[in-house]
Length: 247
Image 1 (tube, helix red, strand yellow):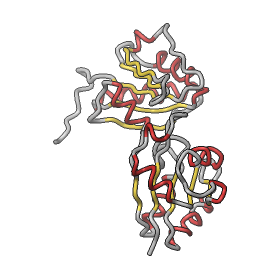
Image 2 (image 1 turned 60 degrees about the vertical axis):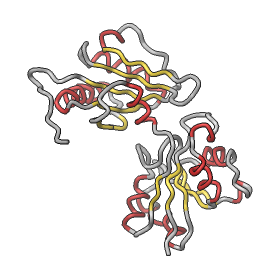
Image 3 (image 1 turned 180 degrees about the vertical axis):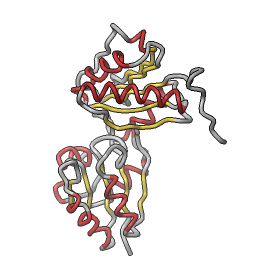
Image 4 (image 1 turned 90 degrees about the horizontal axis):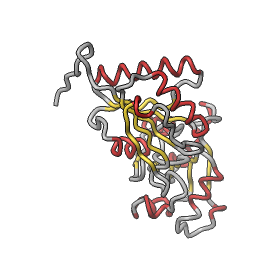
């Protein structure tokens, strides 16, 4: 029989795991001996905070990240195919969401390997919950283009989609480019568009602020080196009527 691939969330920052992860998630992670991780160093730091029962150095950690070639992913299924349970860890938050682990999960399904996602913090959902924007309909877009012109074009498209679909548009940025992203948003988007910036979620320094773009202008938030989620919403207008959604 195949082993089970457990998708194990991790804290979004330096918060102790027991503060944001339920007991079952911690218990499952503590009994595993084989992991696929985004970065071995940070994964070991996380696992050292759990009651593993064995030295962390004795665990098997195989990396899956942006440097992993497509040909290197299928061999990561070998322990699962041999009957061993494996944990998939992201750098922060939920594995396989804006995370290279999604490819491993897809291959596991194709191979008939059971996949079990565990409960833990999702920056996307926490930001949406705290934004006050449309929680029933939203789209997550990951990272937007880095090049300035392409990024502003992408923001205008998201603004149009928000009005067309009556849905919040959610995206993220690398922390050191947060300030540039904020500036692009307040430059590209209409004054009445709503922008929520959620930073350091679940940490003592957490901030979640939602304002009109007009009210953000001239008041940049301090986002230096802070993981952040951005959310845009523009209410439907006469020329872009509210989309109809079936129950």
